[in-house]
Image (cartoon, rainbow, N blue to C red; front, side, top):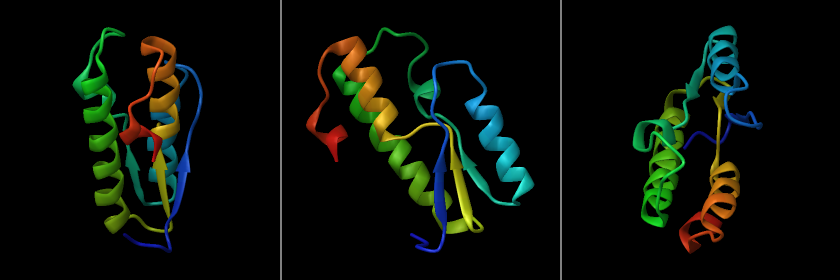
Length: 100
């Protein structure tokens, strides 16, 4: 992982433009962005704890990969904190993996 790259994450509710902003900022700064992996895995608010763990692992892997090629900044439209919040809200618990 490139320790010189600053990770910048956009926070907010669903459908407020976080993905669009992350992509535009990455274009402006000629760097990388990481989209929300959860959209690729689940298509509704009907998900399980196993889904949450898969989402968290996939999101973390995507960040690690993009950090290798990012230039000064890496923009993300979500992170593990957001995954924890959604899991706690919808499933009333957070798997241990997502707490790290």
